[in-house]
Image 1 (cartoon, rainbow, N blue to C red):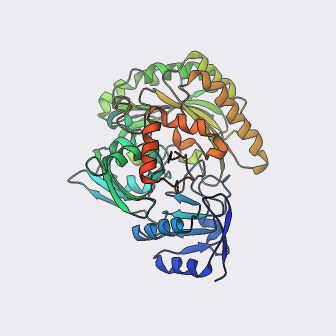
Image 2 (cartoon, rainbow, N blue to C red):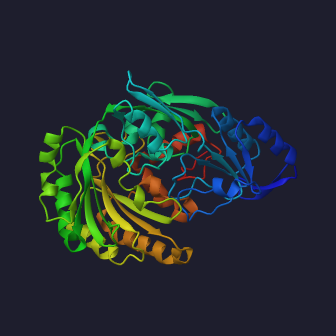
Image 3 (cartoon, rainbow, N blue to C red):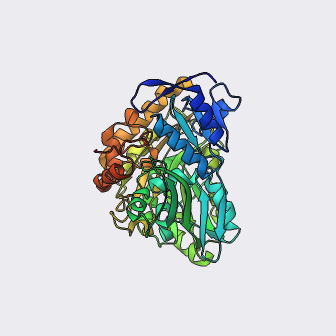
Length: 467
């Protein structure tokens, strides 16, 4: 094989000896994919169609040993590294330009222990994979709101979801991980083993290594009383006011989301979506404030299989479209914030875009700010702006719109973004990334110093080591 030009951690290109590359390829059980390979263009893609980076090499890992080999190879040759889990990855940090992409997308196994009510899932699994297996036993854990999201990125950044009112965030249900550190060592992290690392993995993102498997606590979850209620956009201000008052006074069994979006029939609407995880009778009573406002265009709240509510927004987030997200946490929803979102939504250049409030959940709010690396426990909800469009020629207009919405909403927020929606430092700025980690940032820096002092894992929402 001929020598290969690659990007390095120094910022400069280097020539990688062909013999070394062949040796690396031979050490893997999974394929090593090159730029001229037949599977290259499809493999380098993530869900966000706006991401168009070209790694020099893609290691399509078949298991833990492949990840170890890839990390050691990258470290020994100072290669720029990115890590892809399930491949959702809205900001696109999973794909690097010119370096080595460590791809876990083929590692999707999920094993459920119904007696212990736990599940262990490989790092490339999606929530659709996970929910399918756990629901076979009538069990689930908090897990996102779009089924094709990967479990890895969502968990490591905190993880909002429909069950968070009763069971906390995704990271609050994490029991242990298997992780490959920057020197190629395999560690188990849990509350009793490498507990400092375990703390940092619950909100600190992909800064400390490659997580090859996650173990979660499961809970009994049967059919839920769930779905959206839709209102005409002319009632958006009133609907969001109803949502604000409702979200601030609900029992643990409920979690909520409110959005301004365009319905499948092409009409813009205000939507309040709810999920009640409990008895149907109690749920009907708890949800009356939402269902009593109107009349609505549609009330689709009904007893629903949990896997179905997990797919509620899948059709609004189709793979291959172009996405640009902005979000922040807010402790309360003011009249001014509602007015700002309504005004800016009507000016969106794409009918596929939306703005929303997603509630953290009562149980998530009761966890201390320093108990996990995810520190934003006093927030009522995350507000978000999802710019979605199809044509690359419209990139500028849609990105500009999302940034304008974020700037207009800033006075009504805590100033701390949701880390899973932030891109690279070169795109977002160091201050924004630091703010996303909140009060726990310095403690996270100390962990980075310990577990990744050379910053091998930098192609992420990066916590820079101070050594």
